[in-house]
Image (cartoon, rainbow, N blue to C red; front, side, top):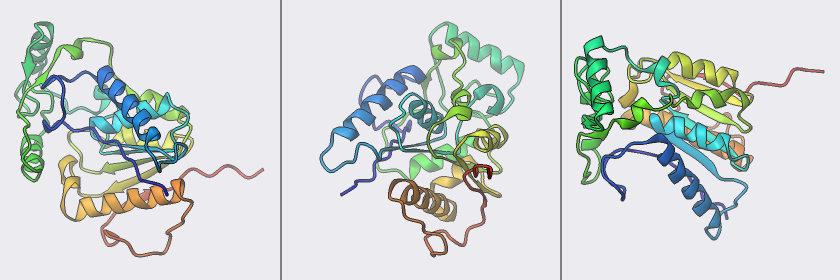
Length: 256
């Protein structure tokens, strides 16, 4: 019996540990520990474990998979793979405020308006974030996050895409303003076993509920069925099948 195991990172306040701490390297430590724990569970096939992450977690899914060649498949939805190229461009005075907060090891709002010093600041992001938190169950999330990590080396999971060893599904919101879609699209197209799904008319936080959510989940389940269980669901009707998306399948090997 195979249990489907997915690893999703979120910032909604439900995890244990130091509150409001965000450091990509420490989150990747947690991913490695979670993967090892999943493999140790009874009834789990250690050779068929997949990673799945959303937003910054989409970058973590790629980074964690790249250093673990036993991972069978990876999924990144609306992924932030490179803040340098994907983040919404903010005014210079806001950048200076953020640098000052990081240098003084202060906290920033996790989400805010485009003219505010916050970790996420794209147009419409605060409304979208708060809507997603509101549909959760008794979230303990609060709007603050550590900033010191921003002064460290750039965190660029995208650097792993061109050499990723396993099938990788990238689900991109075409109108994403939090994580601009272009770099993620190119990364999926350049990955040896990359598969791409683009959802027209959808912004970053739209994929967490309603028809867009059903469409993304349906595509992710089909991907996992195909690569973990060897089942091809082509031609079958599944949840979200009527929702518009653009697909790029896994790259085919050239004919000899």
